[in-house]
Image (tube, rainbow, N blue to C red; front, side, top):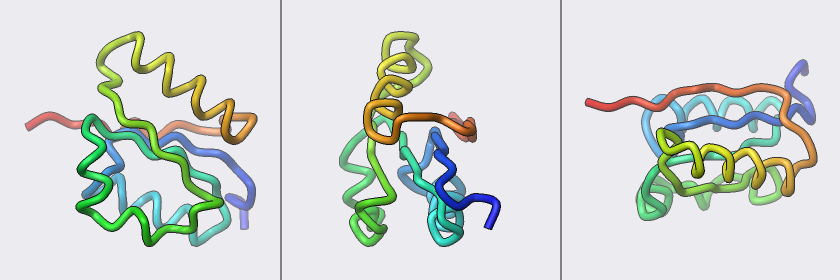
Length: 92
């Protein structure tokens, strides 16, 4: 698969479309850094069911520059690279 061992950051992925995208990427061999503003959202939406060796979680508001930079650093520390970003953050 094209996604085998590719590293993706997916913002807004603690639930909804971002979470579904994450599951599909993982099913196709990707390593995924999930992001959402509130860590409790990850617990409520069964993130623990995903393969732990393929997933890392970063809770933080990427609308804030400091948090966005920390997300990038966390991904590089965990997976050693970033192949692509899915910017799925949304506000209703």
